[in-house]
Amino acid sequence: MARYSGPVCRLCRRENMKLFLKGDRCYTDKCAVERRNYPPGQHGQGRIKASDYGTQLREKQRMKRTYGLLEKQFRGYFEKADHQKGVTGENLLVLLERRLDSVVYRLGFASSRAEARALVRQGHFLVNGRKVNIPSYVMRPSDVVELREKSRKVARINEALDSVMRRGLLSWVELDREAYKGSLKTLPVREEMTTPAFQEQLIVELYSK
Image (cartoon, rainbow, N blue to C red; front, top):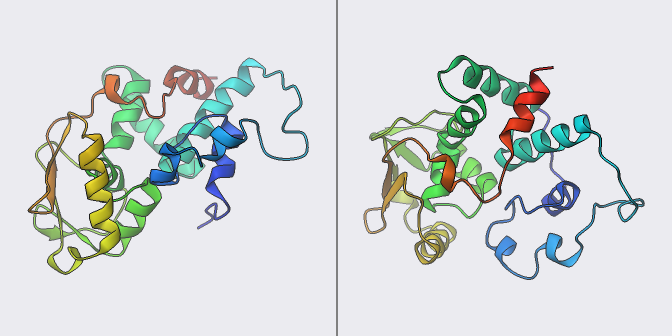
């Protein structure tokens, strides 16, 4: 399956916002967006006048790149969100946040979604006591995620957990640091999805054409 494998800081610069793809580095002054706040490439510092379509496309690309999805996957999530009751844009974000790799990231077992995706694929986690290695597995409220016993001494995971404990958790997840387990308490809350900040209505408008 085709997947971007180049420098991820380049993606943040292209979208002109922090997508938090490098974990803790994004919170320091080493962040590429902080140091070179213009798109990459020869014409990155030139003037760019975006059309309505261009603005909508960029918003879709930002969300896709944040969650590490390909176009077909992303379109599938949008169609599911569109068939649900409620606001389509908010439904889309809630679906993406309910992915197992997103929940693992929000709980602090990984410093980025890409790292969370890799840890899930490597079989480090149990969901409700059963091994799950599918990053797109959709979590339900009250589902419990637990780090396997043999993975609890991995230094990188412990460093990520310590970091998230300092920053704090979002309201829809709950972490038991000593037991290396956490849960999805409720459905994700749109008002707390501010890093990065999305304008999901632009994506709805793009796909509605």
